[in-house]
Length: 139
Length: 138
Image (cartoon, rainbow over all chains, first blue to last red; front, side, top):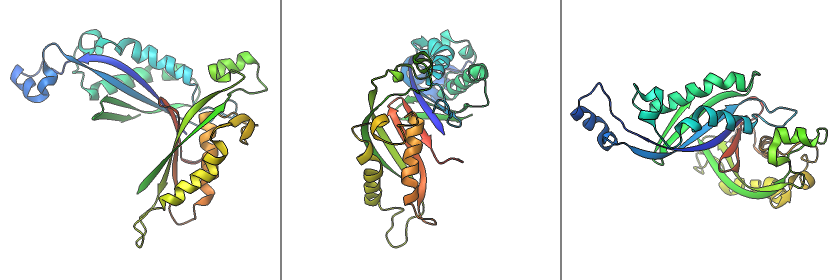
């Protein structure tokens, strides 16, 4: 069984690659490369999978998942300028593709210590940048 | 092909096990263990899988699916206190996981072998928390 929990964070970013010229950046990223950045209300869905515990009737202890996501993602991402405030985006462009990968890495880094047994496992994450742009990753 | 029918019901529940202490229940279920219970507007999505029938052009008669959901889920569960009024939740904790599994158990026998079959139950307890259940082995 899969359990999906939805989280939200507001963050700004600028899509601009140091490997490209100003014109190339403008051509590739359009208004997303405007120099002072811009922001989104991101919606993050985290899906855990596993059997239902006979004891608790739960697949995942949701409060524990909330704490993991807060500590590993929301506390660092919410109300931040991703390019400047997060080490991962000093070199990588904070496209949603790169953001979702960073989020997955951060969750996996502490998943096992947070959920020590075989289950639940991280099934996947979905990141909604806007209502029209959604990105998904199966773990 | 997958087709999904959505339905809503409102119900109250309390998540706690009689064998555990109040503190242990609070540890596992948090505020959901408050003894007098609380409620949700559950949103249920029932997904059926099959190929469109050559004659009708339909995977499954949605009116039939609507009636089935009404009779097996909404009539017994809507505006009820699950623990007190809807077996088996007098014996097992009505977590979202267990409610989803119970809904699957109620719907699944109504699908004939070899025809369209039940693919998934998605049950939203809130907008920010839902479970997907596709049977014991999937």
